[in-house]
Length: 169
Image 1: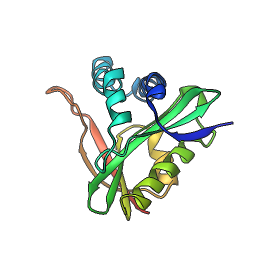
Image 2 (image 1 turned 30 degrees about the vertical axis):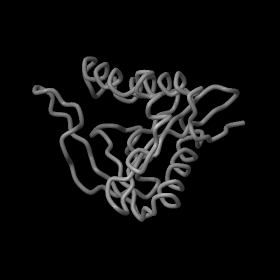
Image 3 (image 1 turned 60 degrees about the horizontal axis):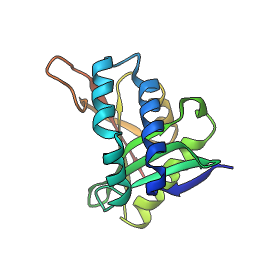
């Protein structure tokens, strides 16, 4: 049985593993290997994840995890970007666990936190152009395309683009 939990220090290794594997699975065809390695090293190292699990606040609400038989199979995190605007910063599943409704359960947990604790009335997400795992998911959840912007973490020679989506919550 899958449980959705607020992440604890015992989930750090699982979060790092599932986010790294999910990142590779999502971006291996649309981003360079150097870019993927750079982003994984920055965001999904154990030290950073431990800090993000133990030091939640309005701007970073912490991680929620999907756990089955003591194994992390999905993770989500987000925070508030304006007074009434929340954002999904990260959502990844173990690549072999897609299309089971786990992403929906995780998004529901984060949305509940942003609405109830932080009084969000809208929710944003950035999705990489070409991300055909993320774009259909978010559109199915009511997110509507707003604009393009430069992707996060681009080096000088990289011109990766992200799409900004928003929905009312």
